[in-house]
Image (cartoon, helix red, strand yellow):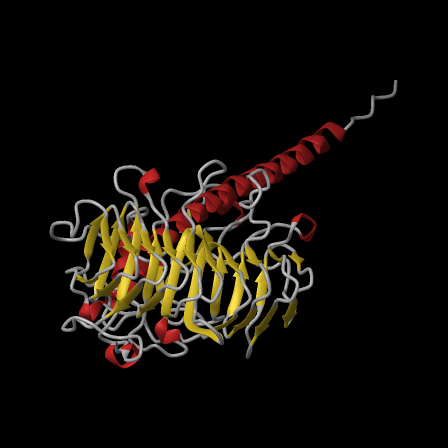
Length: 479
């Protein structure tokens, strides 16, 4: 009788199953360990970001100012205070980090106002050791910025992103409007954040018949949205579809409380007379009537509700702290840039609806130098405000039903202004011959505003002088 043949296939299957199970467990183990590494990387990224921001917070307060004591380029090693702040910030999230896990450097290309934090650590492995993997390395890089970055020079930055559902005229379509037939020459670039398409009016547009806009040197026009030129001639042609430009003055510190009692408890009205004013808080604002004349000594003038209205034929001059008067003919010499400057700060009193308009009327004379902390008689002396001339409070943020008051400079008087006009939530209008009756309006002004409109038939020449403008400050994580 034949013996049945023995079948060894079951043994083979068992071996194959065992090998497959080991491979499967190894793969699962690697996935588990990989997940641990990814989780560690997220923790390192958060810690690195915190460390970079903590270090960046010190950049403007170090001596010398900057990430490194050696500016470069490229910058040298970071200052001790920067390194210590970065390590402390990172360890606030991951206390077990060693100094060797935290590399702090000053990256090139950011004018010595950026700090870089590199973190690295090994993730624990539980199953990877089975296949010889004893550790998975996780590494991150964080960069933070706090300062003025050298680069494109802006004469105009408008911040209105465009809101198609808002009332006509406030949609950011356009955000920069040239109305009438002005001739405009700009030495600095233009950035318009409005995303409005050309079909809807454009981020930049004109409704005049004979306007022209010329940029000199390497200045450019950068539009997030489209371009609706009409008959306007622009040289060189605007660039569309560009990236947003963040508010370059977003890092300017908030206006502090001004010491001392208010200069006026209600609206100060100067009617047909001459007055010398000291800086401080003016509740209800200031109004000039009937050829009134005021002289402003150096410092900050807070219009706390009511704004500032300069009526027809009125005159406003900045003067040095020891002076009591000047004339239109001698003002340029009487008011040196370094010792003669004011900041007009327009805000509200009890409620946002109290905010009044800054308005310069027909035939008015306004000759002002911008703020200089070293001669401020207000008692504040904040160097970050240097070269700010006019600042309208960012709050209240404009809505579809509640715009901020327009800042309006118009008429045919003589205006000699320099510095930065900062109205991040308001439209600024410049019209007529507000820079001088007859001839060209030749001013050294920079605009950082919500919207901007240039109108009339005058010639406007906007000079760009870095040393005469507020220093654009950027802050935050950049990597």
